[in-house]
Image 1: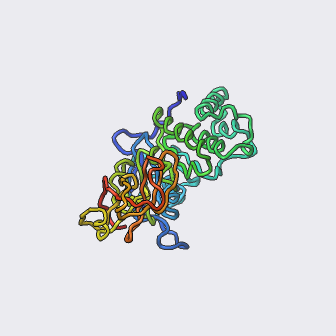
Image 2: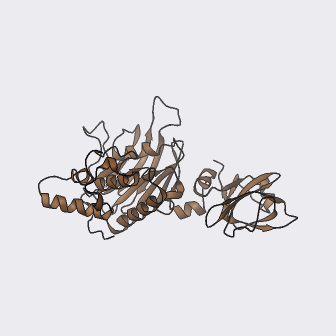
Image 3: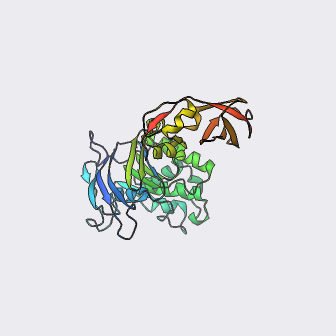
Amino acid sequence: MIISFTMSQDSYVPGIPLLEVSGLSKKYADKADSAGLRSISFSVEKNGITAIIGKSGSGKSTLLRLIYGLLEPESGAIRFAGLKVEGPNEKLIPGHSDMRMVSQHFDDLNTFANVYDNVASRLSNVNLEQKREKTLEILTTLKINHLESQRVADLSGGEKQRVAIARALVTRPQLLLMDEPFNQVDAAFRDQLQRDLKQIVEETELTVILVSHDPAEVLGLATQLVILKDGSLVAYGNPSSLYNSPPSRYVARMLGKSNILMPDQAAYLGITIDSPCFAIHPEWLKLKADEKGEFVVESVFFRGFYEELIIRHPSLYLRVYQIDHGVLKKGDRVTCEVIKYVSVENY
C-alpha cells in the first residue's frame, strides 16, 4: 500500500501533547453512580494509536465523545494542541474541526448513495479535479477503490467500516476517533484493517484514539493503553509494560486472563510474597506430568497453535497455556512450575 497523503498540521504545536485530558469528570443524573467519568487525566502524543479499554459501562464511549466535543464535562478540561476543546454549550455545531469520529454503527454514512459519493461529499466543489483525486486516493489507500460505484447498503460490515474511515480521513484530520471499529468485522477483515490502520499512522501524521471492548484485538495495535474501570482511570501506558507488570488484578485479568492468587494460596506454588495478591499469566506456568503431582488436569482446550489447560488443586484452579499439543489430557496429575509472577493491588 502506497500512502502519499499527509494529515493536516494546522493546529499542531511542537513541544506539547497533541491532546491533554486533565481532571475530566462527567456525571449522568439518570444513571448509577458508577456511570460517567471521575477525574480522568492523561495525554496523547502526535502520531500513534491510543486504545481506551475497559469492561462494559466503564465510560469508554463517554470519554471519546467528550474528547470530540459532543458532550459537556462536569469538571476538568480537554486541550487539543494547547487549546481548549469546546463542548456543545460553547459551539452551535458540536465536534472539533481537526478531529473526525467513526461510530460503530456507521451513522454518518448515506446507505443509499454509492461509496464514491459518500467519501467525496466531505470535500468542497471548488476544484472538482482535485476533489476526485483526493477521493480516489483515500479509497485506494483503504483498498475499496473497486467499490466506488456500489451502494453502501449492499456492502458487508467490514466494507462499510472502511468507507466510514475513508470518509473521515479524506479531509486530512489530525486526530481520528473510533468507537469499537472492529466490532462488526469478521476476523480476516479485522486483521487486514488493523494492519492498514497501523501503516497509515506510521506513514502519515495521523493520530488515532479508539475504543475497544476486547483488549486482545488492540494489544498489538496500540502504542498506548488507557484502561478504565467504573469511570476511573486505573492504568495508562505502554501495552508491553502494562501486560508484563500490571498494577492491579483488574488490569492483569483484562490484558492476560491472568491467574489471581491470594497470599495464603502462594505456598501451593512454592511462592512467598508480602502483598495483597499476585498475578500469574497462563504462559508463566509450566506443567509436567507427575503421578505424585498435587494438581489434576480438569480440562484441555485446543486454541490453534497452543492449548489452554485448566488445572485444579483442592484449594485453587489455574489457567495454563502451553505450546506442545497432546502431551497432557484430562485427569492427568501434574506438577506446576512458576516461571514468573508479579505482585498486584487487590482491585
